[in-house]
Amino acid sequence: MTRLTRSDLDALPAYVPGRNVADLARELGIAEAIKLASNEVPYGPLPGVVEAVTEAARSMHRYPDMGALALRDALAERLDVAADRIVTGCGSVALAEILVKATCLPGDEVIYSWRSFEAYPIIAAGAGATSVRVPNTATHEHDLTRMAASITDQTRLIFVCNPNNPTGAGIRKDALDRFLDAVPSDVLVVLDEAYRELVTDPEVPDGVQTYADRPNIVVLRTMSKAWGLAGLRMGYLVAAPEVAAAIRKVLTPFSSSTVAQAAALAALDQEDEVRRRCALVTAERERVTEALRKLSVEVPSSQANFVWLPLGDRAAAFASSCENRGVIVRAFQPDGVRVTIGTPEENDAFLAAAEAAL
Ligand code: PMP
Image 1 (cartoon, helix red, strand yellow):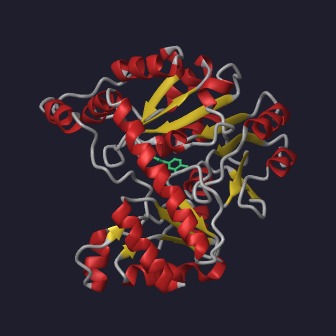
Image 2 (tube, protein in one colour; image 1 turned 120 degrees about the vertical axis):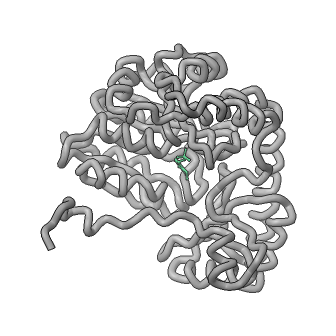
């Protein structure tokens, strides 16, 4: 057949989303599975958000505000940065894609730690950029020394995932300072802080507060996790004004829907509730970590809303055993399994499934 698409895409792995409750119902006949595979916070939409969405839906026949100005202003106030430094997008994954598009021409290099967020290789390849993967340390952290040493004249962008998905490792300020000082000023560093709201280690810095004055740093955040909007898609970034302006030029027009903008604005009014929910999740994270360690599994300390079980090539078998007991977790064969922290009852069900699987 005549080739209509790029041949290099043949080798590209597809993004594998967490399996759904409906998948288990169909395949295993398990009616009420528990999903701990996609890192959502389990407590439902924040108060007032469904109402804001319902109201906004009345104007769905009109295009959204392309600049998301009201949302940008609200974020700017909350983060204490100028509004022209903020860009919103259809989830932070879309913004990650735009960042690569805005920095890389085919053949340019994107550095990231591996294993890390599984969209990075797909995004780099999609832009025709070359991925430079730097293996995590033996303690499942970014190897920042090797990442700095991997920078070449072709390097245009570096993803630093803090805390790292899927290992949960947080990078502390002294290590991050040292790394950022070593990066040339013409290479953009993207601090992917999708799980920032779940960080409890005071040494793990808030990228916006700590590095806002560095023009080659972009901080990427999402409203999918702590803010409960995974299904509506809203992410944002904070960048130097010139970088933000360039990014806006390649942003897909109207990619933040009216409904998502209204939902995000309503969610931002619920900061106390977000804090309360995050505290529940992080307390459970510590409980689950301790319980798993009692089962003699290595569990690195996590700064996010998931824990990492470095089970190596036993990952797929562990995940499938949990699924047979109605708990969906995420295997990253051949490295390990990531388990999202759910409600206390969901976590108990997982711990029982884990004990049986191990
Ligand atoms: N970055 C990281 C590290 C993530 O784990 C995720 C979600 N899995 C994202 C970005 C993307 O989140 P979203 O597109 O929902 O904002």
